[in-house]
Length: 339
Image (cartoon, rainbow, N blue to C red; front, side, top):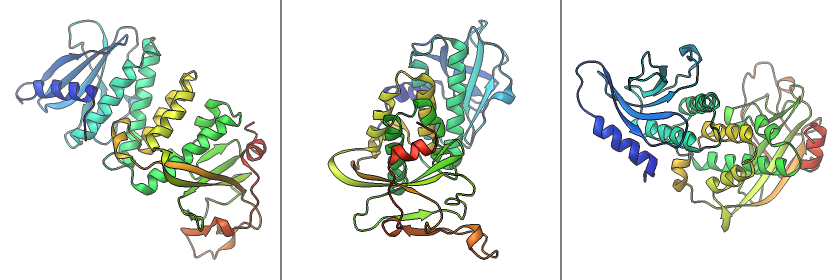
């Protein structure tokens, strides 16, 4: 994996600080960041694990109970300013069992966030930082080494197609991103008011196989109205990679900071990291998007139509044979109260 400039700088600083396991305390090197806060690359003895320290002048003390903790890292507030000043410092440190490569990816992402420059208020910047760390917490609990498998890559592209088209249909940007629950392993991919949209994506041209993951996923007694979005993609050299599709939406959210922050967090939670963009070479083109209402007569398994002895089920439907009408995305959004 080719390292970016930020990651090379952090790793170089950590290498320069490495060594020595006697005593206790911080060894640090300043990291140049165009932000109102101060950033240090550090190591803490006696463990000598890598860390990123962020110092704020104008924020109150943050209780440790409000700081996220995840696999492979810990977050805590320093009791004293390691530079001898009067800043409030938050440390993000790799745990002894944490992957150095994944921690470096996380640290780079957070440094990029601090360099973003769109938020100059320190309290706002701290809020964004903690929010993004929570997204990484979710990511590390769900994903492996930072690159999505082809099936997950395809599914996420399909969800991004819906994000893009929902905004184009007139649904407010924040409402779309807030409704997007797929990266959180929600029962359905989009939850709007009392209803929902589940997205299924295929590259198949002769049929539309859709894996239904549970007896609850297509149960409209739990959420109503309920729709199934069937996104058919093709592969073509003129198409978009998954990171390119994400960037297209990122550009459209530039004037909507809260939605943009939520979108970046959702991408991390889904397992799409900017530092692994080069690993996604497939280029997708959108061939069709069909919105099917899930209601009486739709082929599905639910608790109310299977034997009580069946506790769980995962099954496949050919959506081309479902016999449900395509009502279109705009009409579905109207019925959901989204536009």
